[in-house]
Length: 242
Ligand SMILES: [Ca+2]
Ligand SMILES: [Ca+2]
Ligand SMILES: [Ca+2]
Image (cartoon, rainbow, N blue to C red; front, side, top):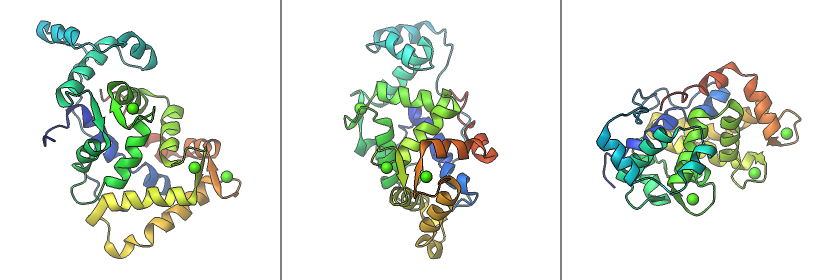
């Protein structure tokens, strides 16, 4: 995997910078300095009029571009640009979990991002094929970059709902929290690391499990997040970065 293969995966780095979503829900990030920070660089020249580029975009046009245009909030030109970036970084047209993890791990050199990358990969791999194709990638990006607040929260909920049964349990949240702490690595005080994820889970449930039945539904998640200004402002980070 080339070290600079971050181009069209830049949004993942943005997501990495914003991975605090969970911590922001709770007010206290385990790491004082999260890596990266929101990047400034948009990777898609939204309105390139370069003749050569356009020509190559036509040559490499993905199948079903029209359909993707309907399924996402990207314009045809943006989709062509995204596709060019995707193909240049992933000539095979598909990203398996191992490669995805390698890419994502580069954003967290100080920790072990593999567990969190697995959850993220699963969220992007909407059709469960075990690989991300351009369509998976672009549909996920569309939600993260251009989705409504509800769509973004739904995406996040789905990420945390590991077995996809519509409920977030404490066990699931503990796995997610542990993976985030692992990813933050040495930015987290070692002494805190053992008990902190469980404490975060308790705080998460105190806030989110409104009826106290031990699981968090999407309705509870949505309602709580929408009433929280910090979460709402964190959801804006990704807008218009493409
Ligand atoms: Ca897939
Ligand atoms: Ca579940
Ligand atoms: Ca509940």
